[in-house]
Length: 72
Image (cartoon, rainbow, N blue to C red):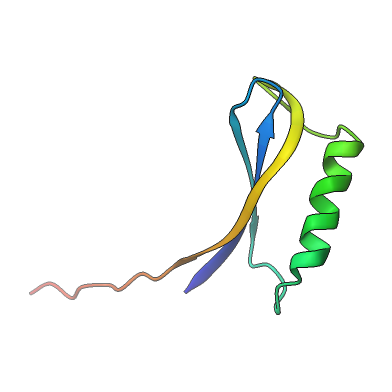
């Protein structure tokens, strides 16, 4: 099963910008994630089609489980 941390931001035009990080370290530290996201906004390090990052929308862990089906 693979895991991905998705950092979600609003850009200057109000659109959603998602930054994905594969196989994040566990346990997840929500305070560290929030601080890192705030720093990304403050330092204006990401530019999207709708402008720079303007606000934190959220963060989530996405898990993917794949089961192979044996065919005759």
